[in-house]
Image (tube, rainbow, N blue to C red):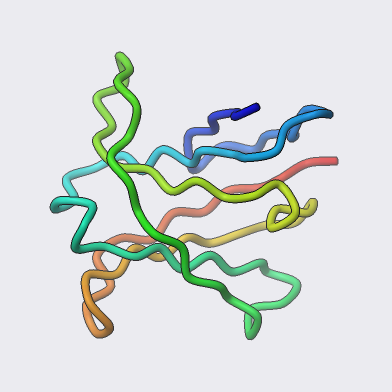
Length: 99
């Protein structure tokens, strides 16, 4: 099961969900040139990088997303940094996962 959250929002992950799709608004290049670094406020040194994908079609116009396993999103405040290559941080998004 997949749930979707728009970044910059607070959300709770429903029981039984295995993955969360974070939709990344804004003008970003093709997803195959991007990587998303996700870090929790409580453990910023443990940031992990995830692939960026083309977003599923929706009325919000978002073109890219990152899909995370639910175990990677314990209740906390997070920052997603979208990188193009290793040196160019293009965009940052903040969100909160609730209990």
